[in-house]
Image (tube, rainbow over the protein chains, first blue to last red):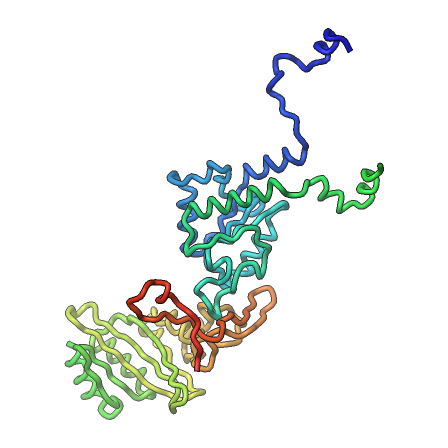
Length: 182
Length: 190
């Protein structure tokens, strides 16, 4: 191919340099991790720190997670902030079940992670008894920095997560066979 | 004054006032359960105790009678220190007359007593649990209820399980040493 032909084949010179080549999966994961919409499941004093994290001093929007959604159907990540009593537990589970996939969960603070100081007849001993937890944040309550650290850990996890294409392939074995063709 | 209230109670009800206690200016009257409702009526209408601060209950397990009710009365309108505590004991299986018709605020207090202790009230209009859910089979503040709780199952409402206590309740130790020594640790329960 001559030099003249190569130049002719190049992309429109006006947008040349503004194009990034990547894999679909990497792009999707990148978009997901930078636009996490939290479901603020504030149940106790941790919720105050969660609000602090959302407010101007700590500003969770620097990490793309400022769109607190009070409807589970619009949320990506449930932040369980506080003591989960048995009376509340099934309500938390029900909210979780209404969140669309893919979804993640952050157990914020000692109570949500393990029951904390409430070794009691009334308190669920960790929300992981009911729903799968991705990140545990220690503290009683954790400082906003700790929650942000947890959020960044979750972003790392999402970045490395398996591609959505592979996820759907698993559900359709026929499609997997076709693409696995050498 | 509370001392005057005590003496007018004694004049009116005589032997039904079993004993009285004074501690730092606060007066307590231990009364007969059968006369309790009349006494409350008298306290409200004649002595001016228009405010019921609290209703609580005690579980004297191993003693007879086992249960004890405690009522904290206060007179807002008379001014001054007008506090009066009324107690009575009663054995297992008896119901208590509700005072929610005298002081409407008693409704929630009595529901809490029922929820935590299992004491039932005669004449309480809304006799439901208030903290735990309907269908929870235990009364958690009774002395024979373990601190860690008991497993229970109420489908689609709630479940409970035993909390891990690592051999004993978590207890704080009073010490002048660092917070590491002071913070709650599990202790063997005897």
